[in-house]
Image (cartoon, rainbow over all chains, first blue to last red; front, top):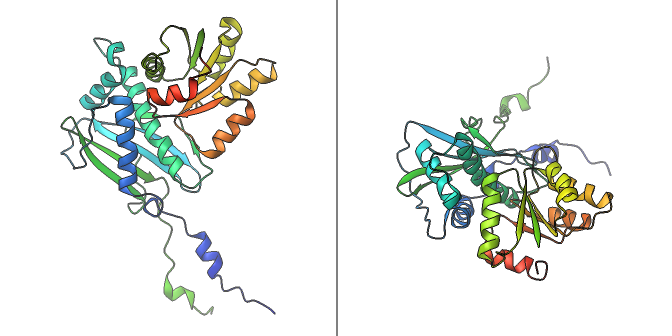
Length: 180
Length: 120
């Protein structure tokens, strides 16, 4: 028996998953809450409500490369990132924080949250070292799972965002187009 | 007992040291290494009794460090403290000769669970 290749199977397997197919906001929030309690402090609460972001913001992120490719990005005010760094360092925090202390501490939170997000996604995947600076741009607004929280009254966003632009949508008229 | 802590994050090394203390392992010499290559060199020079290492580090990863140690004949007890704890990584760690893999975030209970019997 001859089976005709209609292309259906190929098309369905070519569909790239978006992050909302793979993880939901509640899971991301739960991962962040666990990281906060372990790293920042036992009594540190993340309140899942959006806050007004300050003008001077900074992001830390790790990249995930695998069946789903993107970044796990934490964004907050620069002052809040410093406060987080002090909380992580506790008694080891110097009187004046160096820029590299903030990069290290804020990056490490992204590393822990990102590592656990990666564990919840289909693998195998690779995880980059953390980076701190201006967040990677959102290439596909549909491929984003973002959670907004408030910590000690300050807004923090956790965005799990795809690195790839949307796939082109095939035009239905072209499917039945007859070559001239 | 001398414990070598390898992590490229100074903050995370501090947190590991603090958690060791909170877990009750507070009477030990601590040596720090900032990546796998540094850890490999310090296992030779400092002769630690235990290595607690991150996985993902620049220059040399934790698993590369462990493989280099075992290739060179070192049998120093070695455990991972890492943000990634997938079954594949746990299997890879065990196959390379790691005693355990503690996934971040961790608590002092997690440390006791893995380190009791390893740290005297």
